[in-house]
Amino acid sequence: EQPTVVITGASSGVGLYSALALAKRGWHVVMACRDLDKAYRVAQQVGIPQGSYTLMKIDLGNLSSVRQFVEQFRNWGRSLDALVCNAAIYMPLLKQPLRSPEGYELTMATNHLGHFLLCHLMLEDMKRSTYGDRRMVILGTVTHNPKELGGKIPPQPHLGDLRGFAQGFKDPITMADGGKFEPVKAYKDSKVCNILTMRELHRRFHESTGITFLSLYPGCVATTALFRNHYPLFQKLFPWFQKNITGGFVSEELAGERVAQVVADPEFRQSGAYWSWGNRQRKNAKPFNQEVSDEAGDDAKAKLLWELSEKLVGVP
Ligand code: NDP
Image (cartoon, rainbow, N blue to C red):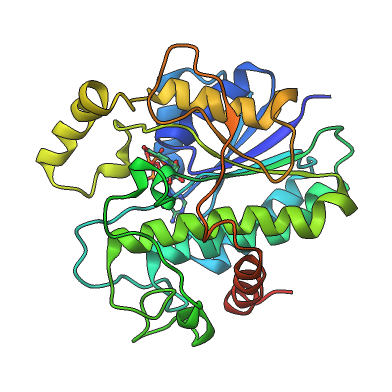
């Protein structure tokens, strides 16, 4: 039977091209998006075949919307065979934090807490699936990792002892480590949380459920809308810089193809892995299970993050 995958943030960039790549492989794709008109338009533009996708509303920055999405998915009645947590916001120019309806800083709320709740709830759906190769995939990024060249540029991520989470993460708290608001760091912190979540899911549930938990760095996809909130000059120069100076440039099509491989190809079925094709894009670059940052590889922190995030999103 045709397997079903849910992809968050499938209305742009990496998520959109992942939807295309998986639809082409015969998957039915649930495009979980905040703007369904836009999602429909871009699905047609890139040529995702009619009938191979279903649009469903989700706002990852709003926990009740995440719960409503899961309810809608369940009422729809298909089994969940793969989940791709892809949606993200990056707001480098913000001076003051934005807040989710629950009062949490919006970058962390969208990129981490919304997905944390989604994974938590949809694990139950995935347990019920009889598909032979179920996978949960969360997008990472090189900028999570100060050991890599692409991760050395300040501000570097740092969750500290997660006191911002422990203290409830609402005003006046803006950062996981309880420090001063820094929007670029908030994005990187949220991506560290994404990788920690994937590793903790693996530790807790891989053996008992047989589900494969994975993360990946698809390469620097310098043309996506992720950089829409940056200076216009940056938006012009960044793709050029990645193409000509660092050699890190990856097209949206290739990034989507890489996500599809991690979702579906047998050689990526290694639960707990963080797949990467390296930073300098050589032709025929081979994927490898890359070491994550010290912080993202810290099991005690993964456990603490799990427990504090459960409190913030209100589960179990
Ligand atoms: P885009 O900005 O192009 O796409 C982000 C997607 O997330 C869009 O579909 C957007 O919706 C959606 N989204 C944002 N906020 C919400 C929300 N509150 N609820 C639901 N959906 C939301 O970014 P990319 O494609 O570049 O990034 C996708 C993933 O890839 C991210 O996780 C990012 O961290 C990761 N990544 C990207 C890299 C890059 O170089 N671009 C490198 C490494 C990792 P809408 O269309 O409505 O705006």
